[in-house]
Length: 342
Image (cartoon, rainbow, N blue to C red; front, side, top):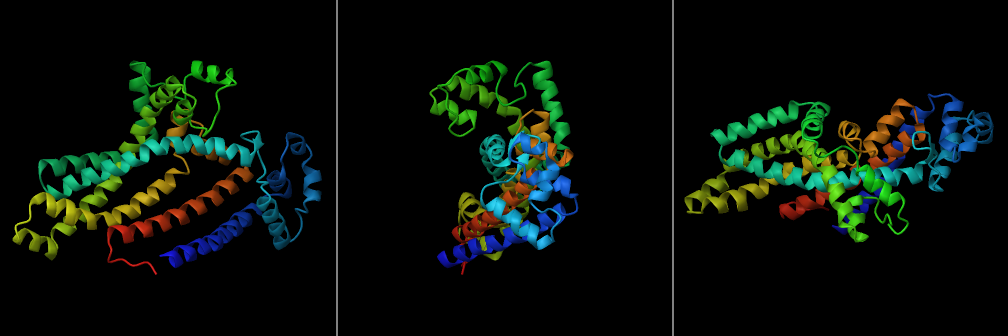
């Protein structure tokens, strides 16, 4: 197992190298003046782009420029974000904290609800319960995320005056800004409120998470539920399940101990990929609910061709997907001991 993990971590280096070459190749399609933004670290430098073009040799051959760019990245200089109006390295953690906070609450619920509904649907195949969950899954999976988010916002905030958009309320944000004793340990108000002994801030942040979390659950859980249902139906028809029934095993043992454990293997793959994608941020959710996280930052950067941000986010996603696939493979061996990672 240790040798396998070591090989995969080494493989991560080659993946990042390939991603970096691809990103830089796309970057080279832009003019030298536009590419100079990747080396801007202060607002003053942004006012003298021709000087940067000459200083960093942005008219040099591809391999020379790539080597120079890698050195800048390795030194921690990811460039200046035009959208955030600050260095990318500093802006990244503030936006990532917002996205991470949402997924800390949404992802576990998506996985648990998806597995639970899929198990119920698969065990009770062709019953009213199965048909009801399948219809709900089709509606949830087909419904555009931004549309469902807008409907929730209109009903709860527009008509019921509940769960306003944003990260925290304006009054709370003003109090935090004027209170030097409040320390942003994690960048996530739900946890920082607890760490600072201000439970009111935590409750305020949780209230602002209700609608975004519901949106994430309704839209994403459908895929997990359908995969789990298919897995349960397939496992329930296998010989070892028929043998277990013949030996007089009760329904709970057959479904929960035997069938469900094996049906989880394809679900882990899908769940791992969904969580990895969620780390990039849901553009629709963050824009509609005014949560300035990774999705919002990425959307704004794409519309303004903020290249340093786009490059940094792509590199980050490469790391996330390789690490998530490693975790998925390790979980395979934990769920099914017959799987050996060598």
